[in-house]
Amino acid sequence: MNIKTIRSDIMLLLTATIWGFAFVTQIQGMEFIGPYLYNGIRFAIGSVVLIPLVYFRNRNRVTSSNPKEIFIF
Image (cartoon, rainbow, N blue to C red; front, side, top):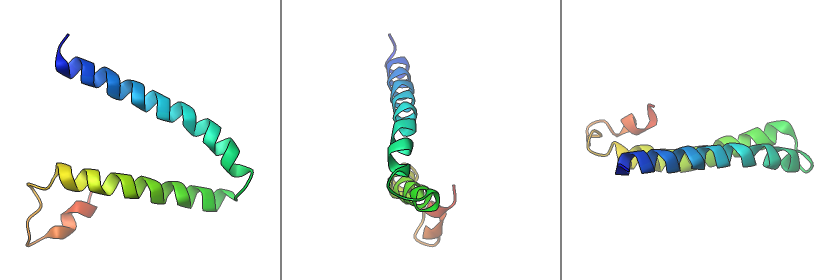
């Protein structure tokens, strides 16, 4: 098998796993907090994870003259 094929399969499995656990965590989370706070926390966690990934993936394209590019997806 090609290394790209294996990597793609692993990423697809990881995505399906995260998606599957999301339903369980939503049910458990809604027992303790409200929907707006829950979605706000989800958004904050997603931002904390996504911003460094975008920064390190695009660090060759971000110049010192315009560092705000990391926040434009």
